[in-house]
Length: 335
Image (cartoon, rainbow, N blue to C red; front, side):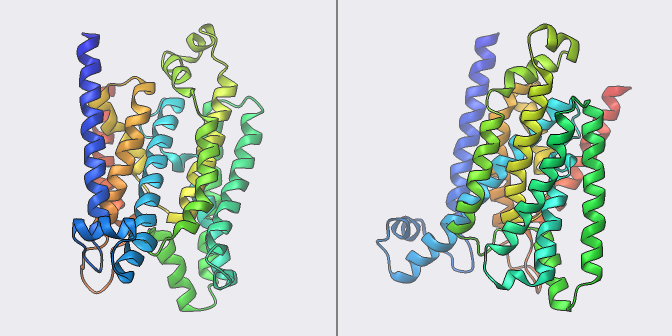
């Protein structure tokens, strides 16, 4: 039975990886200028004409890599938090870091610092994320309960949301307000390797902090008392996950804006394929997150109406119905 389950998991993982490769190819081919697979490969190798090389190497490739990295980070973070909080409705936004990062970016846009350089807004978002991370760290080190962490996250999110509304209310110019709104909608458009270099270190540190947390989450799924009996340091596990998720998700928001539902929906999809063991769904959640965000980003390139679809809007349209379905299924299992 275990061998059959292992083969099934390997088959599902292989299928996801293949789909991810196909999505990556499509993300490289489609845009304002559609490329053939041959032109894309030549552009990657720098063997095509100058225009194609620029499109592939300076526009499509960093956008593709950043989309996959952000999606993987959000999916992985969602699986970690749902395992830690033992709540299937938890997502990276529950710790308040996403909202705080958004507040930092909006403040920078309000001050006009975005005109100074392309790094200004992402750095503002990272500063906001680090402030929220510091608050969560202080709470975690006091041996706070899971409920206290959730309430702290709710408080941070509420305060940040109020701050965002206040800054938008005093926006000095309609164009400034529009820039704030567009950034809040999330996008990977016009991203470069500079954004990747800015975000990757924070994501890497965050992932390193949670390395090896899967076994502890498995034990925690049996209850805190059982986990302690099995030798799990719950305080350390909780602190590592909260801080690691905060850093990684804060970097994601800094370069891609506010993108919801990935961390909420993806772990549920992973459970349908790999079972309910928290450790087993971590890697699949990362792969599925990368796949879904790449597909959503491809949809944003479709010429619909007079404007352009934003990544956060596409994920909201996809994720909200799935979220409602999860709620109804959760209610049915609790009856």
